[in-house]
Length: 277
Image (cartoon, rainbow, N blue to C red; front, side, top):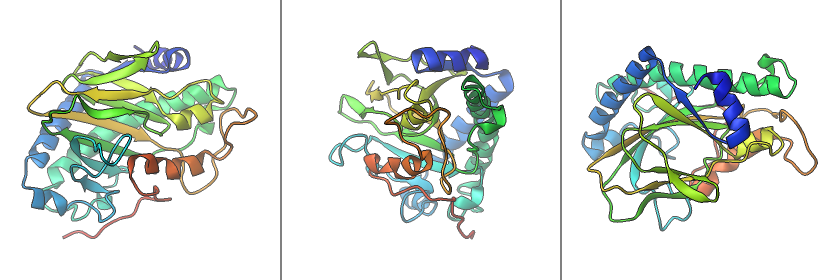
């Protein structure tokens, strides 16, 4: 599906598939390999590369949830903000540098796709493409590494609360809510699923609803998901593409506080950096 077709699908169906070209697929596969090497390290090693509030870098199993703290998501994760390795504690250590290089390479792919989609949406609502919210300094990649579990759902039904999520997994499990029921998403190694969040709903005056989804347990020995989570600016007011009565006006305020529904702290106005070594 081309980007123009993907944007049209978002407006029509509230989700879209986006095929990756060969070079982008190569970057994704390299990220899979680097992520597996990182997550299979000792827990103590991984925790060195996470911030105290779990916003940056490694986030241990059980720290995030989709509905309730007593049903944590069955995964560890790693967040890479604003294409800036310095947001990750001890970012120059050999235990994380190959992973950060792969994250940076794939960031270029995901950010280019996101930028085009947001520019096309801005144009759809009568704005110049440059009127799309600048997102690169406020967005992040999140890599989820799933644990074996006896639960039916590895993540409960939720929406992500961002502008847009670009998702791709290396195994089955993702289900999206369409037609009032949850339907499985086929696994592709070169196709992203574009999922709108409630911030995009607010930006479009309710035209694009958030895509609710969940992750079903297929009893895989491991499962890896790569997410690009696009945010608008968090340090200044952001007007919507179109304003309708009763709809939010300041999208940035919604963006800063949306993580609370997953047990996460308020998003930083600007990503912080951490010392190396």
